[in-house]
Image 1: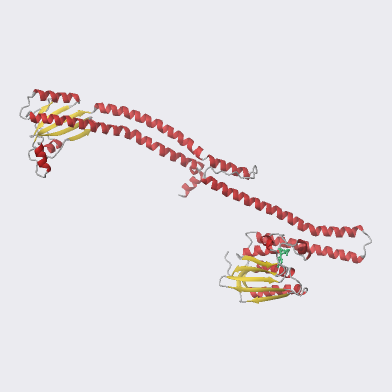
Image 2: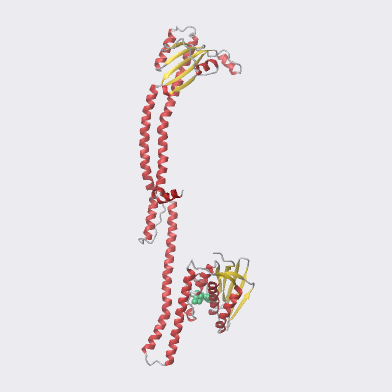
Length: 497
Ligand code: ADP
């Protein structure tokens, strides 16, 4: 079974849809041809045989009446009847036997069986069962039709009515039997010539069907070939716009799906390019400042020592910024790597947040910003402590950075049976609604110069979002300029890989 499967998958021909269409057309086309070429002569033959038999029966009925009326069974010397019997025999190229009710042949047109007794089942039946009608039998191997007709007095009209009213006819006494063998040589000849014709016709039609079966798959699969070309053109870079192949619903679906893939690839490519541009720009800014500071020091050999110190301290700050950007870029790339390994452990979220707040408090105190933790419930969850730390540190950092002097930051923790919820609320400058869709983009800042001034890299929120997503959670925000901002984070209590 396994080998068969392997063979199937290794064979290009067996797996092709072309072969299936070819076989389908071939069977659908050739089968009727074969049936036609076999059944046509057979049907013709049986129709002709039936017609011949019923024609003979009609003739015999007439003859039977004549036999009765001339009392032939008691007087076989009737010349007229004998001539008629001979005529019928020669007309049908056959033989007529007249048999009486004792099964004795009283007349044979071949004159060989006269006086002999015939014990044929059909003859006996015709004689012994008064209701038996004419019997015809076709013997193709000996090429004749045998018709047996009981010779009975046809009931008169009154008798027929009498019989129809339910009483027995009674008078229709069988006097004997007419047995005729009719040669079917002429029928055979016609049938065999028809057979030859049907065979030829079948062969020609089969050839046409075979040719069609070879051509049709190619025609039917043209749109698929077109589709393959379109896709390979795009993948080898000849074309950037995938052409629609809507000849079939199926190809349209594939080409639509491919179009979506291309659009997505293009978006990814654009965002990658944009990212590279942004990274270069962000990394260049501190470099430029450092270069200006260093150049100005070098250009004036008499620079006083304190200016040296001041400029070097500025250069030091720029180096710190450069380092921070690189650090955060590495975090982004680590978090956005889909295969980022999660180091999951049971963490007390309340204590965890308290520790983060404690670390940020000295910075907040400088601008008299109050940080409060509201624990509505004790929460213990399965999380990656390092990655989740990035989320809350960034959100609380932002809540302080973009706050006003003497402002407040309130962090709330709550949970239900499935998730835990952390919200970070501030009384800061707020975020305009039009920035909501872009706020998690890398390097996006509402106010570039302000962010940079307070040491922002524009990567904090994208790191936070990537990390929340790795925990299979969600993040959303509400904000009103000049009133404040709330970030809501929802994360499942139990981590499912
Ligand atoms: P940054 O390093 O600039 O803070 P983030 O990705 O953390 O970068 O934030 C992106 C931008 O979103 C910030 O530059 C700022 O304009 C805005 N922002 C983030 N958090 C807040 C907040 N709590 N209040 C007001 N604006 C905010």
